[in-house]
Amino acid sequence: MGFDLHALLAEREGENFKLYGEHINPQLVRVLRSIGFDRPYVRAEGAYLFDRDGKRYLDFLAGFGVYGLGRSHPVLKRALHEAIDADLPNLIQLDAALLPGLLAEALLARCQENMGRVFFTNSGAESVEAALKFSRYATKRPRVIFLDHAFHGLTYGPLSANGGREFRKGFGPYLPGFAEVPFGDIAALEHELRRGDVAAFLFEPIQGKGVNIAPASYWQRAQELCRSHGTLMIADEVQTGLGRTGKMWAHEHYGIQPDIITTSKALSGGYIPVGAMISTKAISDAVYSSMERAVVHSSTFKNNQLAMVAGLATLSVIDDEGLVERAKLTGEAFMRGLLPLVERYEFLHEVRGEGLMIGLVFGEPTSMRLRARFKLLEMAHKGLFSQLIVGPLFQRHGILTQVAGDEMNVVKLLPPLICGQEEVDSFISALDDVLNDAHRNSSLIFSFGKTLVKASLQRS
Image (cartoon, rainbow, N blue to C red; front, side, top):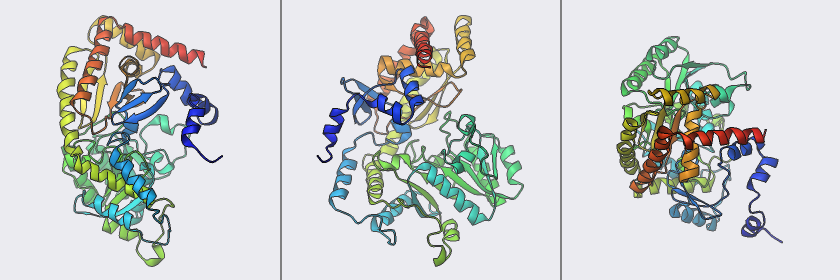
């Protein structure tokens, strides 16, 4: 018969959640159905998803930041078709192919001058794994410092440096030599560094879980301390990099110069998984120190030709469409639209972030009636209120967002970098409607809460 993708999709249409529940992850299917996110998407373009009924959804999740260019970008599609049609020799392994060198050159051109080497990976977690290995080998030190609320991936190296208890629970023991310090606490960091055995300080310049931000003075002092104690700085830019925050790299906001940068997500253009660990020449050359050590760290698919093409095309689009500056300007437009809502609604306490990485911070209202309802929700489950914002935004307004972390009342926005004023206005109007309902009589939010609980019970 042969393989016919269109025929297969047509024949099995509508079986998404049945098959996923039977063969992959039934608990995820329960979650999606409970919160009403079980939509049968059939097409995606730009900042929008479309279901089989033709309804359009504004995607402010962007694949956890993968779709910086939006979905189905024509330049990426054309480049990958060209690569496939060219019949490029791929993964010869005992080879030094052209495209990896070109992508490495392009990435280094977008970094500070101290960077000099690139190791390609298949994901953000794998990039962090490489950074941990290289920093330990280059310094001959055992320990790594990370921050509370950090998220660096879920394989064992990154998991050992994960500040989220919900991800770590039950998977111990973790790798030895990892120590957590509070985010933004320079004294705690200095205390650990004084021991003189810390290989690396691993950090996200802006934390994804909670969209937490520290002042430039913290980062600059952290760099001074790391330099004085011989500790390397690893900037995890897997989500924040490549224009997301209105600069090519988020650490540029703070005037610091890390020794290693990890990146992935948006570099793929949303098509072919690709990541990279970017480091100084000294770090890389310490690991690859002789011909005998030329392959001491490697990965089978690291230089996949299609991944390299995706990376090169992505960087080209970022430049050609001015997406770094666009993220900055659109982020400023979001702030102009969102800050008045902080003044208007008691539930919304703060808006924080940079560029198109934005956190909406919700908290206890001041008026007695609203405060009582808020506390009731928090008693049921800490952080539930933020989920009861995400639900109506999706169900009533067709806007896909996410809660920024477990047990926290922060809703996170990660729009594609191609978004503009139209998407800003759509979101501001939708959030205004949801918050207005919550303040006026809470029917929308609290009826969604009842639906969520009822659905969970029915499927338990």
